[in-house]
Image 1: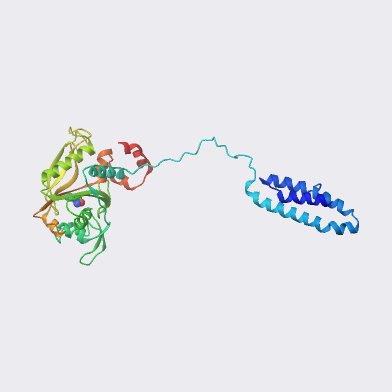
Image 2: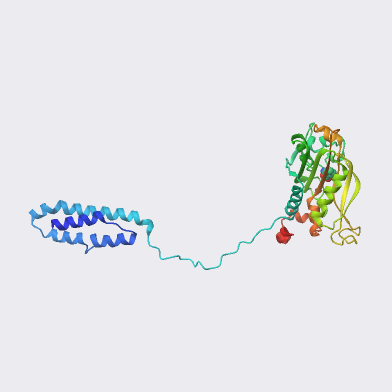
Length: 344
Ligand code: PHE
C-alpha cells in the first residue's frame, strides 16, 4: 500500500495536460469510479483498525493532492479546448459593400486645386462666419453697396460697426492671406459661401467657390490673362480659348468677366452656350490699390491679380447638369453617376 500511494503521489505531482480533454482523461484514470485512487480506497476500507491508522492520513493526502491538481489543470486548459475546426464555410463569397462616389463639386474643387498647385499656388482656408471688415470693408465696398444689404447677405449679428455674417465670397480669405502671409503671395481659397437668394434651378443660397490671388512686384494684366488661359486649357482641354469682357468689382480695377469656348459645340453654338459659342466661368481683375493698402501692402511697389469662380457652375458646364438644386439634395440617383468621374 505504501509504495502504491507514493507512486501515485509522484504521478500526480508530474501530471501535465495540453488541453481540457487530457485533463478529463486523467481525472477518470485517477479519481473516476474505477480510477486508481478510488481502487486504493476500496482496498483501504477492508483494512484492520491498526492498518487504517497507519495509512489513513497518507491516502487522504493523495486524494486531496489529486483533486487540487485536476482543478488547477482544468483552469489552465479552459481556453485550449480542442475545436472541431471552423463552423463557417470560409469559401463562401463575401457580401459586397457598395462603394460610394465623390460629390461632383468636390471632384471639380480637387481638379482646380491640383491645377493651381502645379502653378505654385498654396491653398488657404478661412472661417465661414466672418465679419463685415473681411468680407466687405477691406475689399473696398463702399458703405452703402447693395451686397451689404439684408437682401444679399445673411447677418449673424447685425447692428454693430463690424457685424458678423455668413461670408458671401471667399475673397475674405484672401484678405486674411494678405494680412498674414509674406510677399510674394500666391494663394487659392476654396470654400462654401452663402447669399440670401431665392432657390431655383439657377441660384442657391449656398454654393462653393475657388478664388485666387497673386501679388508680387510688376504683376500685370498680361500675367492674369496667361494664368487664366493655362488654367482653362488644363480644366476644359487643350483646344480651349478664352475671352475677356469688361466688368466691375469693388476690389479689382480693371475688372473682367471670363468666358471659355463652349466645349460641347466647339464654338458653333448649342443650347448650353445659348448659341453664343461661349460659357461664362469666372470674374477677375487687377487688385485695386485701395485693397492692397487696407492690408498694409505698398501699392506703389506691389501689384496683383485676383479671380473667383463658382464650383457648381463649372461642374454644370462640365457634366451638363441643368438644375443647381441637384447638388444639394443628396439624391443617390444623381450622385452615383459621378463614380468614374474621378478619372475624367
Ligand atoms: N468675389 C467675386 C464674387 O464673389 C469673384 C471675384 C474674385 C471677382 C476676384 C474678381 C476678382 O463673385
